Image (cartoon, rainbow, N blue to C red):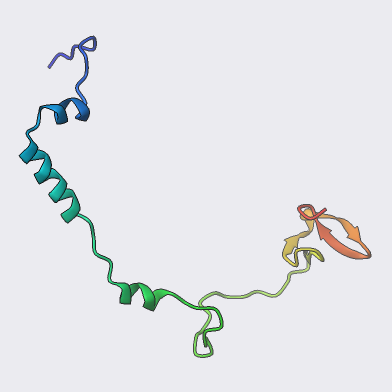
Length: 99
């Protein structure tokens, strides 16, 4: 099928102008009915508040101790590889991001 690229294109705004009032009301009613009702109780159960009791929770990640080629930044307290070492500040190692 050949396409005439020089012909003016029709968009939704053009089509809406030709619709009847009843069709527009029906479309609006369909759009409102398509919205999803969120159950507030499901939302509240997944929300964790600060200070919640997490004593019965278990870690799902494996924590490794600091390796020989890593250091802890004295400013941000993150563990970095030695290649990220910028120097020392007051005798403590500091990373490139904090330097």
